[in-house]
Image (cartoon, rainbow, N blue to C red; front, side):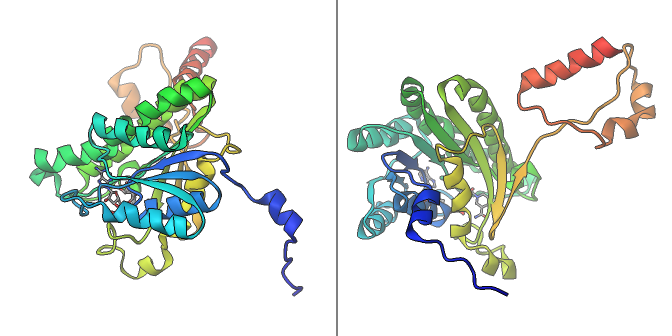
Length: 312
Ligand code: NAI
């Protein structure tokens, strides 16, 4: 085995991705994954708004210390950041978070929707006080922060939105109807933003992370040792970067593995006078994954229908 190739300074300069001059808002960045995203972006030159309400995992309480600590860490490492303690769960909070970016740094280029809480309960015990705050923080929170940022991004013809979904919604998980619905809602949010943002060079993508944080420490078991939260940040940062040109996509990430998750459609079955029995008798074909396709928006799916009708 030869020695590993050590890059020289020139190679490092040419290959390193930077965020110089870019302004990023990262919600829920006082701990866990958001803190790691903030540290990475700031290290690569971004001017960062570290937002965090500073409450507990179930969303109760608040404290300014979480966000401030991360700002202090960034500054100590030579980066630039400002703290914001507003809640993403209200439109006023979202406005104030974006205003912090504009007032402090003069622009906004990146939003990472990361703030989150948990209120797990099996569905038959799910009540509105378990449902509403979870929808408010994860799903409405992304609307509340992204919308005021979007106005600026649209005007400047540039923006990157990264939202935090979850395998709990994309694939399903016991006891998380509230959280799963909010997280899958963020996939729809992301896909529509991708369509609307296309002509303004605004790209929107989502991640479904797996990491050991205070949110997951009770459930990870021995797998937790492999799941350092800093191993999630490279994909969040890449999706927030100018060079990344995908939009409307979802990436699963954890412990150093990253993979694309996509919504696909099977070839299906067509008959102009379709009946219930036709469906029963062709169930296997309808469900078969052979030759599936991956529409990137509703237009592509509709074009597929047109094609089926034309060739019938
Ligand atoms: P965490 O609890 O360490 O981080 C969440 C942060 O959001 C906390 O610092 C919290 O104070 C903040 N926050 C909560 N409500 C807020 C509000 N209304 N306004 C502003 N900030 C608020 O947990 P973790 O794991 O870092 O979670 C980050 C995101 O990743 C969440 O959206 C979570 O649902 C998601 N996620 C995490 C997974 C994991 O394996 N850790 C798995 C799938 C998704």
